[in-house]
Amino acid sequence: MIVNIKYINPPRQPGGRYGNLKLADGTTLMCPVDMLNLFRTGVCEVNTKQQVWGQGTATENTVTVVTSGPYGSSAPSQGLQSPPPPRNEFQPRVYQGGAGKAAPKSDEEQRNMFIMGVVGRAMSSGKFTASEIAVLTKGAAEAWDGLQAKPTPQGPPEPPPAPMTDYPSAG
Image (cartoon, rainbow, N blue to C red; front, top):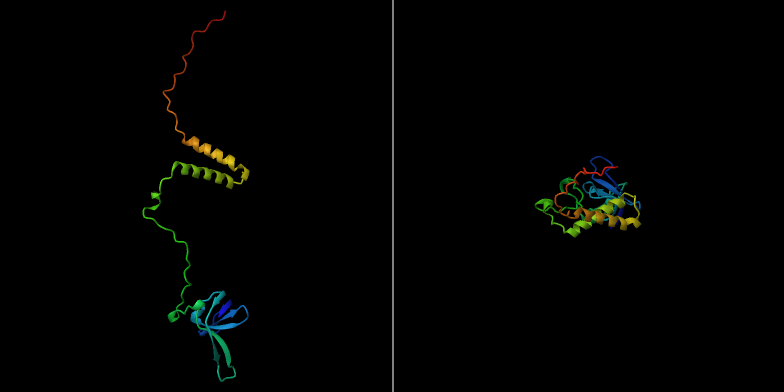
């Protein structure tokens, strides 16, 4: 039976054997206490059966009792509460040796990463428009090329010119 659970209620009396699940359509399903923790609000599928409670008395009542947890799961044994099933969360891959073993990048890859970083940082500042991306890219490329340019070897600096002592005298 597919149900849409709106409320999950514990037993009315402490130590009671049944709580209930109130469905969105107003129906009440009686649920054994050790199965209540399996349910969450929302849509799920449960197995149920009809039982007559108080048979032969003035308070005789036919109730619907939940016989399985959501999607056929069963109640934990010995009344222990089980945690909800674990999620498939992100599990990082760990490589022996850590991050120091990364493959070296080619000069072109390093240049592109530098340019993208500079342009991305400039654009995220909010001071530039999309039409200025080409100018920023060109400026970042020139900066990279300027940083990577090998300085040309120069000989020893030339000595300063000798002071002139012979001035033609005025006169």
